[in-house]
Length: 420
Image (tube, rainbow, N blue to C red; front, side, top):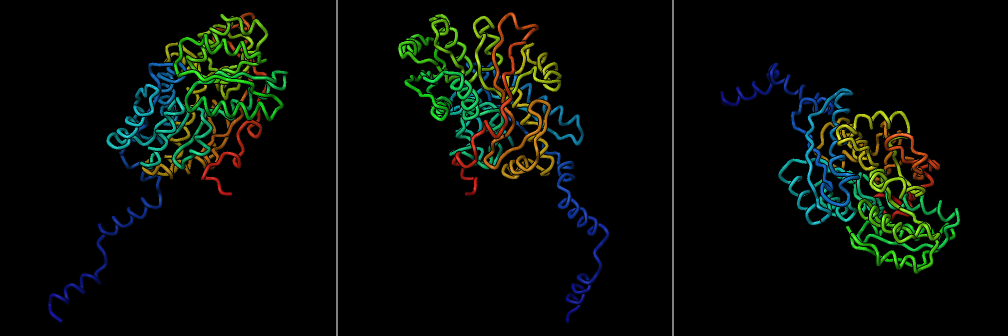
């Protein structure tokens, strides 16, 4: 053998240097401890609040959802093992194409790892598809279409606060059982309204009632007079308002002006938020029953959180969607910490499903394989002016509805993630 070959063999047999051994050991340690890897990785986790800042859902989401998301980051970091997190926000204008453009830019060029809130079901369905394509995370704390955990389910999506199936099941069941058998529906003409209308029809039929007619109104309608006249003429016992936000406020105000509740027809809001009742006033909204997942005055935990939230939201109390943005972001950060990084959206969502949920606003719960967050719902009734004793004291709890009674069974959703 040549001298050069002998030297090569000698180097291969020589024990590794202390420096080299240190590098190898450090690498093994980082692989074995993902939490440590995250702690030493200075990459900032970026959360995008994609919301309605300027239209009919601005009060129930908007600035309040940004505030709630920021509070979740602060509370997570205050509890120990802080992460570097940046929260940004944008207005999707209730347009699916605008939202899709923002989502692509956020994911492709701005390093966003997770998008939260996303009110408007048509917008959410579009953004969910992009999150799946890019292997990022979308937490749907704002939209309600049950398709998000049904035929449009995704391994990258978690649906948090509520959905059309739960809202319809709670409210429609109670109304039909109390005598409201015949329904006329006034529906917002987009993805949310279509999904809710079908869920209402199914629940009404299942509980012994019947939908005898209906009409669909464009999103963000200002004048509901022609639609309400059709509802009056139908002779239905119940006029079901399948809309949300500003549309709900306008349709209820105009229904009262037309004398629909006074004439004996029962007005039912399938979606009603605290901010809607505040805008309507108790004199108009009193007696309305509806299903919801959160109310600021439920318990000590919800009251304490609201006391911190309201001053940062111009004194306005939180809607359920604000609560959903907070709780879902908090759970997301727990999952990221457990996984060790935020780069793999499917891995983070899988961890969100594996970890039990627990927060001061929704209590203990879980996330199913289809992405549906499971917690109790409540049937509320709006108080009369005489019953309200302090600011934002608007609701009476009629009953708590257990999860197994209010959420759609896994077998009925049609989600491809659910094994037969």
